[in-house]
Image (cartoon, rainbow, N blue to C red):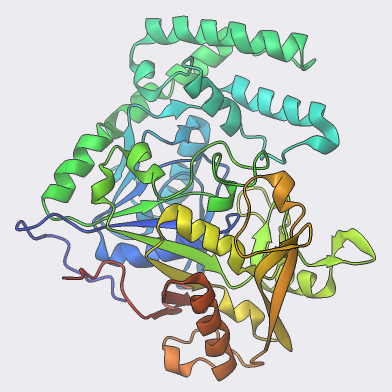
Length: 455
């Protein structure tokens, strides 16, 4: 694709086309690269949920960039980037990321727009998160300890402080004092942790107000106007469907809704404006943190360790968290779990990533269902207790033993690679529209473009 797409004169005869990009597994599917690639045909990229606990790694011209909060479209010149009301926002993390990008020569502040309704992550949220995980010991969820969950708890408990509160210092101070009274009681009386200082927190947060003010807008209204003017929008989710608070392997999930429908709520756009859902699916599976993982490749002699093939996938695929550095657990692609994600998200087409990681395997397995208590099941059940009882049922395919890195056409893929993907497509029940054959933005096979309007 070229960076020279004309974005200056969108059609005024019809509204823009909007695409939602979601992960269909447990996150880390490679959404960032695909969002960056698709941005060539959009005029705005919107982050609609999550916080700085999810990182998107982009490799452009061999240079690696890790984004945590700022939408992946920031790496395309002239693209507007939006942080919606569904995001929980750490101002410390935001301005650190802005500084890193500006140091690399990226124009950020003139192109980044933030919803005034986004919830703030405060120091007490971080302390609660870490102290609670420590108290739970072996039963911990495996959070990143960045305050994401407690911030969402405050949001739904109607005691959160939002971005707009920063611009009225007396109100912000009153609400912060009330919030800290609640959290400090939990920290000191239940979690045996240190209380958070009110004045220090107040001074720190108010210092951000002047820097933040030029970027604050009514994101919902802006997206409505932009779309009606004929401009295409790209909605970028964090984490993956199987970590969704409602539809994932509860309680081993994240704290927000990361399915396609959340784009409407988290950005303030009507559901009828979401025209295409692209499900990002790794050619194998990974999971970070705790929770059930039916197709996990573990050592049969030591279930706490990965098998040799699992370790190989982790090493070749560089399966370490882009934000935390935590190693990811690895397993075969789980098509039964993928079917659940397709159902929940209304996925239009799939993008398969990291196909090249499988290049050296003699054989490859695809999980097509499970046995649970002696019964055959062809779709991932709901909740961790049921998922933990799933015994995977596999189909085995011969490997292709050829290098696929950088291939840009379907016909050039090895026959066995195409056979594997064709079978996956049949089991999933929807088409594969894109295949990523490497980390760089141009190492991509396009079969059907998500932004191409079907008449």
